[in-house]
Amino acid sequence: MKTMTYGEAIREGMSIRMREDPNVLLFGEDVGAFGGCFGVSAGMFNEFGGKRVRDTPISEGAIIGMAVGAAATGLRPIAELMFIDFLTVGMDQLVNQAAKMRYMFGGKISMPMVVRLPAGAGVGAAAQHSQSLEAWVTHVPGLKVVYPSTPQDALGLMLSAIDDDNPVMFVEHKAMYAMKGEVTSFDPIPLGKGDIKHEGKDVTIIATGKMVHEALAAAKKLEGDGISAEVLDPRSLYPLDTDLIAQSLGKTHRAVIVTEENKRGGYGGEISATIGEQMFDLLDMPVVRLGALNSPVPFAPVLEQAYLPNAQDIILAVNQMQ
Image (tube, rainbow, N blue to C red; front, side, top):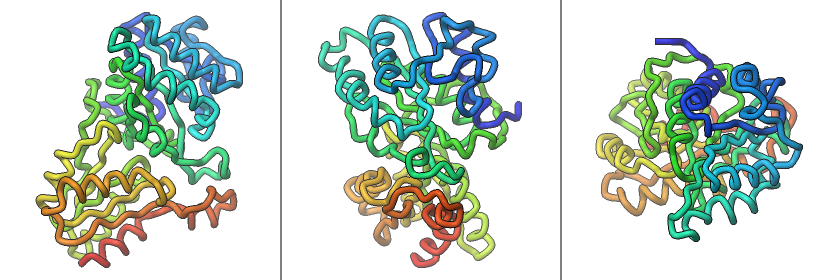
């Protein structure tokens, strides 16, 4: 057992595979000697050298394009974007090339690339550096998407993401980089396997990323009020662990979905639709969705906190279902 921060666990996952496989490499803006914008790659330049931990130009199109070319020709690149917001600049290379090439070549090539995407609000980074855009990438066939909420999940999912022969979008909440947790296993966590973070019998709270911790805080308060809430973390947005969701709903018959993304058009709606189409008979009442307000992320701290869903919002939603 070892205690790590979320950022350290991501670094450990990358380093484990880089020690094992010389074809794994990391590149992005300032990931080298500087150690990355958020310090996640600190020390990796000294261990693996400048050929395998490379600084890139300030061009997300170039970063994603380089990852596509490297993956198509036999390497296993990890590309870091400084913020998920900047994925907009690399969307052509990602959506029209990385996501399509294996399919269009009839499976004759692999596309083993990981794109690290620091996301989320709550750190005062304002509207252009704080978005949660995971719904964009889950919409695209050919891309896999993971969103760890703990150091253990971050390490295990990073190992599986690097091992996968398809492009994997690795969403990281930047407000969690310093969050500490126990790491009891250094084994890969399979993509498409969710996790029950807290068992309960009255309502299922399905939460992603940092909202998992808001859900856990809500579950603790609800427990004191006599309501037993189960907190389910999908961990992998695509593929999605629908079996685990059905198993939980078969017990609780109520679902609250909470994600940090703007509620309109968010991936929480996809989870809700999946429940409605595949698990309708398990429900005692309609699914409730919680998300951020449908506005850009405010810079002012008091407005930013008002913009984000929180534990109290979850508690209110659960209480209204009783």
